[in-house]
Structure formats: C-alpha cells, structure tokens
Image (cartoon, rainbow, N blue to C red; front, side, top):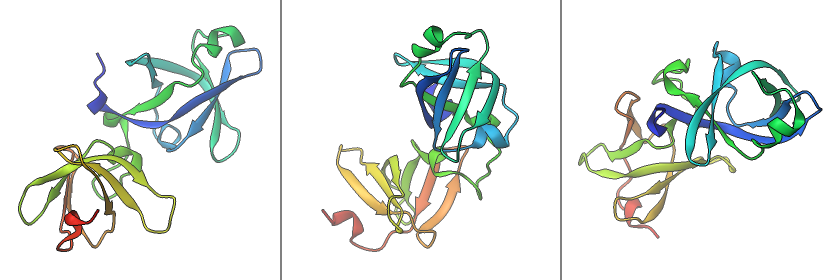
Length: 174
C-alpha cells in the first residue's frame, strides 16, 4: 500500500486527448521527466494507485500528454479526468539542497531556537515575488510564514522537517 508520506503531488489530470487513451496532465513539477520513472501515482477516490507510463510528450511548459499502459480508449481514460498525480519520493532526484516546493508539502516546520513544532506546511504560495509557507499549527490555526532562505536554518528530508530561525513576533501576527 502506498502511503501519502511516500509521495508528493506533481499535478492533475485534465481532459482526454484524442481517441487512443492519451490524457492531458497539468504539471507543477517535471520530476518525472528528469528522473527515470516507469510509473506515476494517481489518487482515485482517496486511494493511491500506480499507473505505468507507456509514453508521454510535452504539449507546452505546463502540460504533458500521457498515455498509460492498458488504457487504450478515450472512454477508459476519461474516468481519470481530475485525478491528482503524485510522484514517489524515493525516486526523486532532489537532495536537501535542491528540493522542489512540491516536495516539502507535509513537512513539519520547527522553530530552530525553541525546537517547538510551528505547524505543517500545507502549501507554498509562489504567486508573488515573496514566497510564503501556508502552515496549519497543531491548534488548527492557519499561518503564512515567509519562505526566505535567510530564515531556513536546516532541512532534514529524511525526517521531513524544516527548522527556521523566525523573526521575533512573527508567529503572533494575524
């Protein structure tokens, strides 16, 4: 069984393309093109299921046309429209110095000074020049924390922890 901690989201499937089982895949991370992976993982009704790639080709920078093994018709592939696509962490070519933002979703954010857990990274907002971690605290409060390299003290990918030295008072802001 594939666990959520063992994968990270890299995109979402769109509409079928043509009649031979291809589907549009909107990517947020092109790791599957950089790494020799035979499969991607789809979230089907909350269950993570591996799908083996027969072939793929880039349509543009944000979209890939994917053909999965044993899915040969438009009708078959239509059932997967809207599925989120995940990549196995163990196959990623990243290291602690070079990780994509998608890979750190689910990491614990820890205060480097106190060692206390600030919260879990739910999303990385890269819509502006200043990146923000969207965090949910253990008490359920949602916070925005600047994702500045100046604040990041240590990244432990194995433990899925990022230690940050945060400016005084930033956690009290609403």
